[in-house]
Length: 577
Image 1 (cartoon, rainbow, N blue to C red):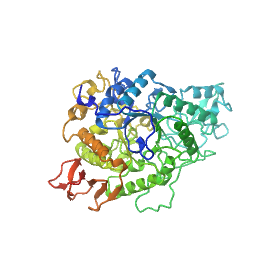
Image 2 (tube, one colour):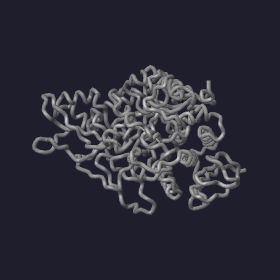
Image 3 (cartoon, helix red, strand yellow):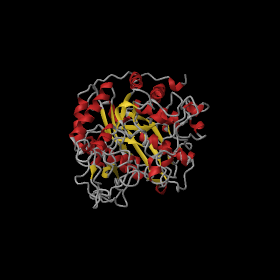
Image 4 (cartoon, one colour):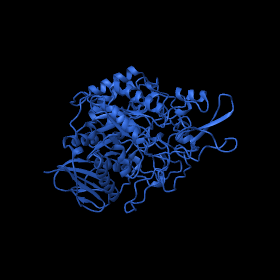
């Protein structure tokens, strides 16, 4: 048994309420597991639930508080599980419901909470609900489950409106009716295999109440809600053309956080399919449902919404507990921009009694061990493009990413980590075209690489088949030969390794109660982020000039110091001497 398999002292999870204001989710570090790429127990090259169960002790050793699992439910896997065909079962690729129960029991025994993905904006086109809608025909109750509309033009051959899919191309597809004639169109904001549900239909509400109860009854600690800014569309489904300056990693023309100095009175343009007021009634309903269960069950929203004041509406006391802070994720490596978004995040989320969350990587974006060293010209929506140039040296990029992580984990609130970032994994850019599987790649005819580069199965043992991902050499996306140098077993217990830095940061974060601290900014230079959080002083040097090391005992350092000075792209934590 490796050292990563030996958990630290822990307290098994029991679903008892926490102290108001100190609930677990206010301070938690939550680790995202992308099941197909985390650990493979049966050797078929695809990660699975038994593989996750086997590797959970390593996450306990890392020092996280909870695990969030991307979709593992029954799916044809046309969008890696975000096209759900049965919300109440496990896809055979990943195992069985019994395997899930074992994984959940093991996690709770290790003191780890478990959050699972919920995909309520759309289903798979293979879902029985959609197949019944196709068979029932226009005007039927079954079709009212989704957003079917007659086409425009004398023969209905034009889409109902001009909306575009987030994955590229039109957001509408025409069906063939049961009698064989060309028929209605259905909306799919993502792939054509992912028809959008009609959340104006009470039947849909009731179905999802049952789905929530199914998993809560099994003991899950909460849900990460996919596309939490979607679901409800503006009445009439009006045409919409996103302004050229809009379009974040979240897609669909969602405006980014305004630049520093911009006119804050100018409201970003809101597409008629995102961030509609009607979504809040859904989350208030779910909040009440979760309150029926013992303990502090949570909802965390994937809501690509700006400005932050609007995003805060998702985490009012009677709605979600958390939402991802994508404004922080998308902030460039610039001291003024970072101070601005940190200040605003703490202020805005605090105004509704919610913790700010902090995140740098996930399954939808270029890994921050590559992204933070890129220029914006390299980024194309969710990923990189084939014409990207100036890809940074991996050592330089990781140096900066470590500094960014050390800064993030010192901030008050809750933080999210993406599997493999604790190993310093970069984006895998040079995947063969024949291996790519992201719908974005196909729907843009190769103009965008999409998200495969951040989803390559992670390495555990440098000399093992598939670098310890599984017992065979199989891997659903090819792993680069460089994975051997990033494997967990070559970093365990090694001073200065990225894994060791993460373990030290998480332990110091907990020991110093940084999640519940208050920031006091320090002035150490224009290109410096410096603050006190409780008894810890944090300094990040983003400029080229060496910064004298403040007085105190060094608690954590992301990179080598230059004698008694902090070099560029290094973060230091210090405590009073």
